[in-house]
Image 1 (tube, one colour):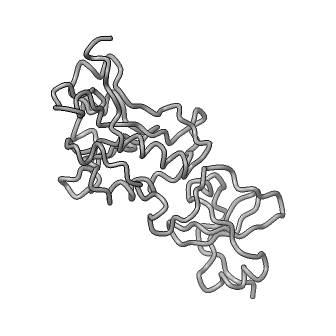
Image 2 (cartoon, rainbow, N blue to C red):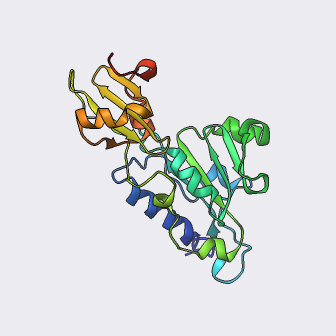
Length: 231
């Protein structure tokens, strides 16, 4: 074995994979990534092992990619939940998702990835997976505490993006915890419910089913204005 064969993904990032898999079971992993390929090795990248790190840190890989879109382009989970958890975590250095980069040094505000790293943007817009890079220190690399996905405000239920189970003329009530908005929907589409009307709809249809915003986006909007009570 070569002295350059003993690379490893930072234990903290392995924990992040575990947390995402537990939160969104059955998700696609087609774009998951750890150590960089041959193209990565020719440039500076957190996907490359750090052979200059000392002691147990030698060979650490400080970046992973988390699949968001499956082979058919369908979102596997709500990426906003993951982003919000990452922005709260002291281990994170920067995140790239959907042509945007979010850096700790800039308060994790969204910046154009094309402007920050034009060549990187041309190689990969990161519109299929979320890239996560951690800080270059032992604490960030070896801290395997939870990443807090379930602690994100409004997120209490692991939800993989699947088409809502509704049929023609089979109206159901849904609740999106990240936006705190209720919808009624059947197979033809969805309509937003006014806050003042939620109790009435609960009486008619029962308690709402918790669902992610991206899952509900599969259904077309039938009416962009909030739904009204019948007069």
